[in-house]
Image (cartoon, rainbow, N blue to C red; front, side):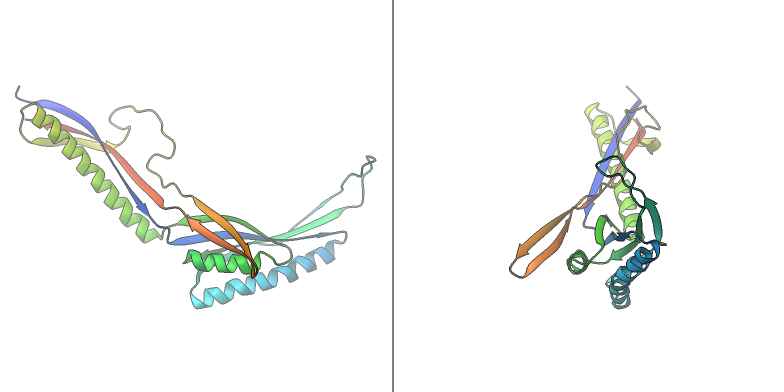
Length: 222
């Protein structure tokens, strides 16, 4: 046995605590008069915007944005099947990216009781620099696993070192069943609400972000 082709797969993953939290908050108002509803939602939004800007100025919030005012009208039905006068709805969405989960929790605890405020989703993520670095490290480690596995096969066959011939992302060398979110970060988070004599508070507890890589490689074992 002079030469054998060895095809293997290498996997690796890393778990990292989120560095950023981007939250979406909506401010809503409704009523019979369009102008009054628009004026009300603008007034309700202003303190929310000011609280975000103040934290942005101190570095607690690293980025934020505010969407334009959205207004719509609907004519509801009463229990007798008759259309009623139009009801106007107005809303403004804001997003803010916090550098610390603890600061996010404090801010949400402050603004969530405010009139018209609805707290939405939170996206836990890494900075672009950190994600790129971890992805490179995970990919290199996955290749290392493939090399080690191929060498183990060669040794078991009584052969010497292995020489790489081909390497690719999973599925490019050998067909493989589709796996959801393969190679992508899985981001989850939890929000806990506590209540005591001092009032309610929100505490966010993000899960770790998982970054994984899987490669396929072909070697010649001699």
